[in-house]
Image (tube, rainbow, N blue to C red; front, side, top):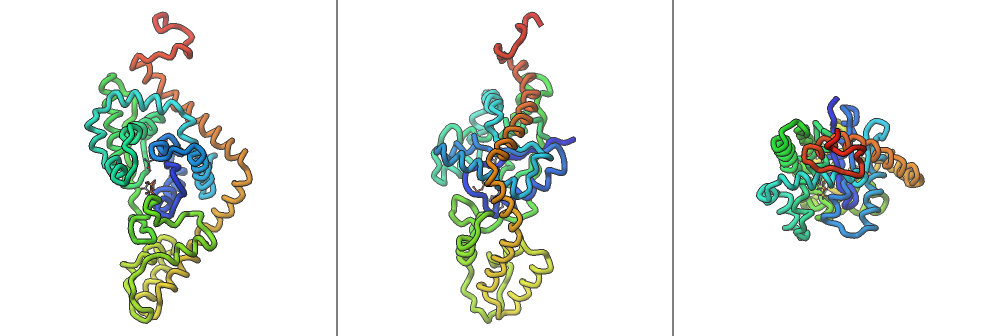
Length: 334
Ligand code: ADP
Ligand code: TRP
Protein backbone atom coordinates (compact mmCIF):
# COMPACT_ATOMS: atom_id res chain seq x y z
CA UNK A 1 0.00 0.00 0.00
CA UNK A 2 1.24 3.49 -0.80
CA UNK A 3 2.12 5.85 2.02
CA UNK A 4 0.52 9.26 1.44
CA UNK A 5 1.74 12.24 3.44
CA UNK A 6 1.09 15.93 3.63
CA UNK A 7 1.33 18.76 6.13
CA UNK A 8 -0.13 22.19 6.69
CA UNK A 9 1.34 25.06 8.70
CA UNK A 10 -0.69 26.41 11.61
CA UNK A 11 0.25 29.99 10.91
CA UNK A 12 -3.23 31.52 10.86
CA UNK A 13 -6.86 30.85 10.11
CA UNK A 14 -7.52 28.51 7.18
CA UNK A 15 -9.20 30.11 4.17
CA UNK A 16 -11.07 29.08 1.02
CA UNK A 17 -7.79 28.96 -0.97
CA UNK A 18 -6.36 26.45 1.51
CA UNK A 19 -9.56 24.43 1.35
CA UNK A 20 -9.92 24.14 -2.42
CA UNK A 21 -6.16 24.08 -3.06
CA UNK A 22 -5.17 21.52 -0.43
CA UNK A 23 -7.47 20.43 2.40
CA UNK A 24 -10.26 19.04 0.22
CA UNK A 25 -7.77 16.73 -1.53
CA UNK A 26 -6.16 15.69 1.76
CA UNK A 27 -9.54 14.60 3.06
CA UNK A 28 -10.41 12.75 -0.12
CA UNK A 29 -7.07 10.94 -0.21
CA UNK A 30 -7.55 9.34 3.21
CA UNK A 31 -9.31 6.57 1.30
CA UNK A 32 -6.49 5.94 -1.12
CA UNK A 33 -3.63 4.56 0.95
CA UNK A 34 -1.88 4.64 4.29
CA UNK A 35 -2.30 8.37 4.91
CA UNK A 36 -0.22 10.53 7.29
CA UNK A 37 -1.31 14.14 7.81
CA UNK A 38 0.29 16.53 10.23
CA UNK A 39 0.17 20.07 11.54
CA UNK A 40 3.58 21.56 10.70
CA UNK A 41 4.15 23.56 13.89
CA UNK A 42 7.98 23.47 13.78
CA UNK A 43 7.72 25.04 10.32
CA UNK A 44 5.44 27.81 11.61
CA UNK A 45 8.16 28.83 14.08
CA UNK A 46 10.07 30.22 11.08
CA UNK A 47 7.52 33.02 10.86
CA UNK A 48 5.65 33.09 14.18
CA UNK A 49 7.38 33.64 17.53
CA UNK A 50 4.50 33.83 19.93
CA UNK A 51 4.02 30.65 21.95
CA UNK A 52 0.40 31.24 22.89
CA UNK A 53 -0.57 32.09 19.35
CA UNK A 54 1.27 29.12 17.82
CA UNK A 55 -0.36 26.73 20.27
CA UNK A 56 -3.81 28.21 19.67
CA UNK A 57 -3.34 28.01 15.89
CA UNK A 58 -2.24 24.38 16.18
CA UNK A 59 -5.41 23.50 18.08
CA UNK A 60 -7.53 25.55 15.65
CA UNK A 61 -6.14 23.81 12.59
CA UNK A 62 -6.66 20.43 14.29
CA UNK A 63 -10.31 21.30 14.95
CA UNK A 64 -10.74 22.63 11.40
CA UNK A 65 -9.41 19.44 9.82
CA UNK A 66 -11.48 17.17 12.05
CA UNK A 67 -14.63 19.21 11.41
CA UNK A 68 -14.01 19.14 7.65
CA UNK A 69 -13.81 15.34 7.58
CA UNK A 70 -10.32 14.18 8.57
CA UNK A 71 -10.95 10.79 10.15
CA UNK A 72 -8.34 9.66 12.71
CA UNK A 73 -9.65 6.08 12.38
CA UNK A 74 -8.61 6.00 8.74
CA UNK A 75 -5.36 7.97 8.77
CA UNK A 76 -2.57 8.99 11.11
CA UNK A 77 -3.32 12.58 12.09
CA UNK A 78 -0.76 14.27 14.34
CA UNK A 79 1.30 17.30 15.27
CA UNK A 80 4.79 17.50 13.71
CA UNK A 81 6.38 18.19 17.12
CA UNK A 82 5.13 14.86 18.47
CA UNK A 83 7.78 13.26 16.28
CA UNK A 84 10.97 15.08 17.39
CA UNK A 85 12.93 12.56 15.28
CA UNK A 86 12.16 14.78 12.25
CA UNK A 87 14.46 17.42 13.67
CA UNK A 88 17.16 14.78 14.09
CA UNK A 89 16.76 13.63 10.47
CA UNK A 90 16.64 17.23 9.32
CA UNK A 91 20.07 17.83 10.88
CA UNK A 92 21.51 14.71 9.24
CA UNK A 93 20.10 15.72 5.84
CA UNK A 94 21.38 19.27 6.37
CA UNK A 95 24.93 17.93 6.52
CA UNK A 96 24.46 16.70 2.93
CA UNK A 97 22.68 19.81 1.63
CA UNK A 98 24.72 22.25 -0.47
CA UNK A 99 24.11 25.88 0.54
CA UNK A 100 23.68 26.62 -3.17
CA UNK A 101 20.61 24.33 -3.28
CA UNK A 102 18.88 26.37 -0.56
CA UNK A 103 19.91 29.63 -2.23
CA UNK A 104 17.79 28.65 -5.23
CA UNK A 105 14.63 28.36 -3.12
CA UNK A 106 11.92 30.55 -4.61
CA UNK A 107 9.75 30.26 -1.48
CA UNK A 108 12.62 31.61 0.67
CA UNK A 109 13.20 34.58 -1.61
CA UNK A 110 9.45 35.32 -1.74
CA UNK A 111 9.08 35.20 2.02
CA UNK A 112 12.06 37.49 2.59
CA UNK A 113 10.70 39.86 -0.07
CA UNK A 114 7.39 39.88 1.86
CA UNK A 115 9.26 41.09 4.92
CA UNK A 116 9.91 37.90 6.93
CA UNK A 117 13.21 37.83 8.83
CA UNK A 118 15.85 35.89 6.91
CA UNK A 119 16.59 33.40 9.71
CA UNK A 120 18.40 30.06 9.33
CA UNK A 121 15.14 28.18 10.00
CA UNK A 122 13.49 29.89 7.06
CA UNK A 123 16.56 29.29 4.91
CA UNK A 124 16.64 25.55 5.66
CA UNK A 125 12.85 25.12 5.70
CA UNK A 126 12.99 22.67 2.74
CA UNK A 127 15.41 20.39 4.63
CA UNK A 128 12.94 20.00 7.51
CA UNK A 129 10.19 19.43 4.95
CA UNK A 130 12.32 16.69 3.33
CA UNK A 131 12.74 15.06 6.76
CA UNK A 132 8.94 15.20 7.27
CA UNK A 133 8.44 13.35 4.03
CA UNK A 134 11.30 10.86 4.18
CA UNK A 135 10.93 9.80 7.81
CA UNK A 136 7.68 7.92 7.11
CA UNK A 137 8.85 6.34 3.85
CA UNK A 138 6.24 8.41 1.96
CA UNK A 139 5.51 7.50 -1.66
CA UNK A 140 2.98 10.18 -2.57
CA UNK A 141 2.87 13.78 -1.38
CA UNK A 142 -0.28 15.73 -2.36
CA UNK A 143 0.48 19.47 -2.38
CA UNK A 144 -0.32 22.66 -4.25
CA UNK A 145 1.79 23.74 -7.24
CA UNK A 146 3.73 26.20 -5.05
CA UNK A 147 5.36 23.23 -3.24
CA UNK A 148 6.88 21.66 -6.35
CA UNK A 149 10.39 22.92 -5.70
CA UNK A 150 10.35 21.72 -2.09
CA UNK A 151 9.44 18.24 -3.30
CA UNK A 152 12.28 18.27 -5.82
CA UNK A 153 14.61 19.11 -2.93
CA UNK A 154 13.21 16.18 -0.90
CA UNK A 155 13.86 13.79 -3.77
CA UNK A 156 17.34 15.18 -4.23
CA UNK A 157 18.22 14.82 -0.51
CA UNK A 158 16.90 11.24 -0.36
CA UNK A 159 19.13 10.30 -3.30
CA UNK A 160 22.13 12.07 -1.79
CA UNK A 161 21.69 10.20 1.47
CA UNK A 162 21.28 6.80 -0.23
CA UNK A 163 24.27 7.47 -2.45
CA UNK A 164 26.51 8.73 0.34
CA UNK A 165 25.76 5.81 2.67
CA UNK A 166 25.44 3.30 -0.13
CA UNK A 167 22.03 1.75 0.51
CA UNK A 168 18.29 2.16 -0.09
CA UNK A 169 17.56 3.81 3.24
CA UNK A 170 15.17 6.51 2.11
CA UNK A 171 12.29 6.16 -0.36
CA UNK A 172 12.24 8.71 -3.20
CA UNK A 173 8.79 10.37 -2.94
CA UNK A 174 6.57 11.27 -5.89
CA UNK A 175 4.92 14.67 -5.90
CA UNK A 176 1.21 14.67 -6.51
CA UNK A 177 0.49 18.20 -7.60
CA UNK A 178 -3.08 19.09 -6.95
CA UNK A 179 -3.92 21.47 -9.76
CA UNK A 180 -7.54 20.61 -10.37
CA UNK A 181 -8.39 24.02 -8.97
CA UNK A 182 -7.05 27.28 -10.34
CA UNK A 183 -5.70 29.75 -7.80
CA UNK A 184 -8.59 30.88 -5.62
CA UNK A 185 -8.92 34.70 -5.75
CA UNK A 186 -9.20 36.77 -2.60
CA UNK A 187 -11.70 39.60 -2.13
CA UNK A 188 -9.34 42.03 -3.90
CA UNK A 189 -8.84 39.70 -6.89
CA UNK A 190 -5.23 38.76 -6.02
CA UNK A 191 -4.39 35.19 -4.93
CA UNK A 192 -6.23 34.54 -1.67
CA UNK A 193 -3.59 34.51 1.06
CA UNK A 194 -3.51 35.22 4.78
CA UNK A 195 -0.56 37.52 4.20
CA UNK A 196 -2.56 39.78 1.84
CA UNK A 197 -5.47 40.28 4.25
CA UNK A 198 -7.86 39.35 1.42
CA UNK A 199 -9.02 35.96 2.68
CA UNK A 200 -12.46 34.57 3.40
CA UNK A 201 -11.87 32.02 6.15
CA UNK A 202 -13.54 28.62 6.06
CA UNK A 203 -15.16 29.14 9.43
CA UNK A 204 -16.12 32.80 9.04
CA UNK A 205 -19.80 33.23 9.76
CA UNK A 206 -22.55 35.75 10.47
CA UNK A 207 -21.87 39.44 9.96
CA UNK A 208 -18.14 38.91 9.49
CA UNK A 209 -18.69 36.55 6.57
CA UNK A 210 -21.32 38.80 5.01
CA UNK A 211 -19.06 41.84 5.25
CA UNK A 212 -16.23 40.06 3.44
CA UNK A 213 -18.45 38.70 0.65
CA UNK A 214 -20.02 42.12 0.11
CA UNK A 215 -16.53 43.64 -0.08
CA UNK A 216 -15.40 41.46 -3.02
CA UNK A 217 -14.10 43.81 -5.69
CA UNK A 218 -16.00 43.98 -8.97
CA UNK A 219 -15.98 46.37 -11.92
CA UNK A 220 -18.55 49.15 -12.18
CA UNK A 221 -20.81 47.74 -14.91
CA UNK A 222 -24.38 48.94 -14.25
CA UNK A 223 -27.04 46.60 -12.97
CA UNK A 224 -28.98 46.50 -16.25
CA UNK A 225 -25.96 45.80 -18.48
CA UNK A 226 -24.81 42.29 -19.49
CA UNK A 227 -21.69 41.12 -17.65
CA UNK A 228 -18.86 38.67 -18.26
CA UNK A 229 -18.92 35.96 -15.55
CA UNK A 230 -15.44 34.71 -16.44
CA UNK A 231 -13.73 37.96 -15.48
CA UNK A 232 -15.65 38.33 -12.19
CA UNK A 233 -14.15 37.45 -8.79
CA UNK A 234 -17.57 36.71 -7.34
CA UNK A 235 -18.33 34.22 -10.11
CA UNK A 236 -14.89 32.56 -9.72
CA UNK A 237 -15.86 31.78 -6.11
CA UNK A 238 -19.44 30.77 -7.01
CA UNK A 239 -18.04 28.16 -9.39
CA UNK A 240 -16.14 26.48 -6.55
CA UNK A 241 -19.26 26.02 -4.45
CA UNK A 242 -22.13 25.48 -6.89
CA UNK A 243 -22.85 22.36 -8.95
CA UNK A 244 -22.52 22.75 -12.71
CA UNK A 245 -26.21 23.35 -13.32
CA UNK A 246 -26.43 26.18 -10.78
CA UNK A 247 -23.21 27.85 -11.91
CA UNK A 248 -24.31 27.67 -15.57
CA UNK A 249 -27.62 29.28 -14.63
CA UNK A 250 -25.85 32.09 -12.79
CA UNK A 251 -23.47 32.62 -15.74
CA UNK A 252 -26.52 32.97 -17.98
CA UNK A 253 -27.98 35.63 -15.68
CA UNK A 254 -24.67 37.56 -15.87
CA UNK A 255 -24.75 37.50 -19.68
CA UNK A 256 -28.42 38.48 -19.94
CA UNK A 257 -28.12 41.63 -17.82
CA UNK A 258 -30.50 42.97 -15.18
CA UNK A 259 -28.50 40.92 -12.65
CA UNK A 260 -26.21 42.97 -10.43
CA UNK A 261 -23.05 42.05 -8.54
CA UNK A 262 -25.08 42.48 -5.34
CA UNK A 263 -27.36 39.63 -6.45
CA UNK A 264 -24.37 37.43 -7.25
CA UNK A 265 -22.83 38.16 -3.84
CA UNK A 266 -26.04 37.15 -2.08
CA UNK A 267 -26.06 33.85 -3.97
CA UNK A 268 -22.41 33.29 -3.10
CA UNK A 269 -23.09 33.99 0.57
CA UNK A 270 -25.91 31.42 0.64
CA UNK A 271 -23.72 28.86 -1.16
CA UNK A 272 -20.84 29.28 1.31
CA UNK A 273 -23.15 28.98 4.32
CA UNK A 274 -24.73 25.86 2.93
CA UNK A 275 -21.46 24.21 1.87
CA UNK A 276 -19.80 24.46 5.29
CA UNK A 277 -22.95 24.19 7.40
CA UNK A 278 -22.30 20.66 8.62
CA UNK A 279 -18.59 21.30 9.26
CA UNK A 280 -19.47 24.41 11.26
CA UNK A 281 -21.83 22.45 13.50
CA UNK A 282 -19.27 19.69 13.94
CA UNK A 283 -16.57 22.20 14.84
CA UNK A 284 -18.74 23.66 17.58
CA UNK A 285 -19.30 20.18 19.01
CA UNK A 286 -15.58 19.37 18.91
CA UNK A 287 -14.68 22.65 20.64
CA UNK A 288 -16.49 21.29 23.70
CA UNK A 289 -14.31 18.17 23.82
CA UNK A 290 -10.67 19.23 24.35
CA UNK A 291 -9.79 15.88 25.95
CA UNK A 292 -10.98 14.01 22.89
CA UNK A 293 -8.86 16.26 20.63
CA UNK A 294 -5.78 15.66 22.78
CA UNK A 295 -6.42 11.90 22.69
CA UNK A 296 -6.54 12.00 18.88
CA UNK A 297 -3.24 13.89 18.64
CA UNK A 298 -1.60 11.71 21.28
CA UNK A 299 -2.57 8.50 19.47
CA UNK A 300 -1.63 9.95 16.03
CA UNK A 301 1.76 10.99 17.42
CA UNK A 302 2.36 7.53 18.86
CA UNK A 303 1.64 5.87 15.50
CA UNK A 304 3.79 8.36 13.62
CA UNK A 305 6.74 7.98 16.02
CA UNK A 306 6.62 4.24 15.65
CA UNK A 307 6.88 4.52 11.87
CA UNK A 308 9.60 7.19 12.14
CA UNK A 309 11.73 4.98 14.39
CA UNK A 310 11.60 2.17 11.83
CA UNK A 311 13.24 4.46 9.27
CA UNK A 312 15.57 6.19 11.72
CA UNK A 313 17.25 3.12 13.20
CA UNK A 314 19.04 2.08 9.98
CA UNK A 315 19.70 5.75 9.19
CA UNK A 316 21.49 6.22 12.54
CA UNK A 317 23.40 3.05 12.09
CA UNK A 318 24.51 4.03 8.56
CA UNK A 319 25.73 7.44 9.72
CA UNK A 320 27.49 6.03 12.80
CA UNK A 321 25.33 8.10 15.12
CA UNK A 322 24.77 5.89 18.11
CA UNK A 323 22.29 6.57 20.89
CA UNK A 324 23.92 4.87 23.85
CA UNK A 325 20.90 5.43 26.06
CA UNK A 326 18.76 3.14 23.89
CA UNK A 327 21.32 0.39 23.28
CA UNK A 328 21.26 -2.85 25.19
CA UNK A 329 24.72 -3.98 24.03
CA UNK A 330 27.63 -1.98 22.67
CA UNK A 331 27.90 -2.12 18.86
CA UNK A 332 31.26 -3.93 19.04
CA UNK A 333 29.73 -6.98 20.71
CA UNK A 334 26.72 -7.33 18.37
P1 ADP B 1 -1.13 31.38 2.50
O1 ADP B 1 -0.82 31.90 1.11
O2 ADP B 1 -2.45 31.89 2.99
O3 ADP B 1 0.00 31.65 3.47
P2 ADP B 1 -0.16 28.69 2.53
O4 ADP B 1 1.02 29.09 1.72
O5 ADP B 1 0.02 28.35 3.98
O6 ADP B 1 -1.29 29.81 2.38
O7 ADP B 1 -0.87 27.48 1.77
C1 ADP B 1 -1.20 26.21 2.31
C2 ADP B 1 -1.75 25.36 1.18
O8 ADP B 1 -2.92 25.96 0.59
C3 ADP B 1 -0.75 25.17 0.03
O9 ADP B 1 -0.80 23.80 -0.38
C4 ADP B 1 -1.25 26.06 -1.09
O10 ADP B 1 -1.02 25.48 -2.34
C5 ADP B 1 -2.77 26.14 -0.82
N1 ADP B 1 -3.26 27.50 -1.19
C6 ADP B 1 -3.04 28.64 -0.49
N2 ADP B 1 -3.65 29.71 -1.06
C7 ADP B 1 -4.27 29.25 -2.17
C8 ADP B 1 -5.08 29.85 -3.20
N3 ADP B 1 -5.38 31.16 -3.17
N4 ADP B 1 -5.55 29.07 -4.18
C9 ADP B 1 -5.27 27.72 -4.21
N5 ADP B 1 -4.53 27.09 -3.27
C10 ADP B 1 -4.02 27.82 -2.26
N1 TRP C 1 5.47 23.72 3.21
C1 TRP C 1 4.10 23.24 3.26
C2 TRP C 1 3.14 24.44 3.00
O1 TRP C 1 3.51 25.57 3.24
C3 TRP C 1 3.78 22.58 4.58
C4 TRP C 1 4.60 21.33 4.80
C5 TRP C 1 5.58 21.15 5.76
C6 TRP C 1 4.52 20.12 4.07
N2 TRP C 1 6.09 19.90 5.66
C7 TRP C 1 5.48 19.23 4.63
C8 TRP C 1 3.74 19.72 2.97
C9 TRP C 1 5.66 17.96 4.13
C10 TRP C 1 3.94 18.42 2.48
C11 TRP C 1 4.89 17.56 3.04
O2 TRP C 1 2.03 24.23 2.57
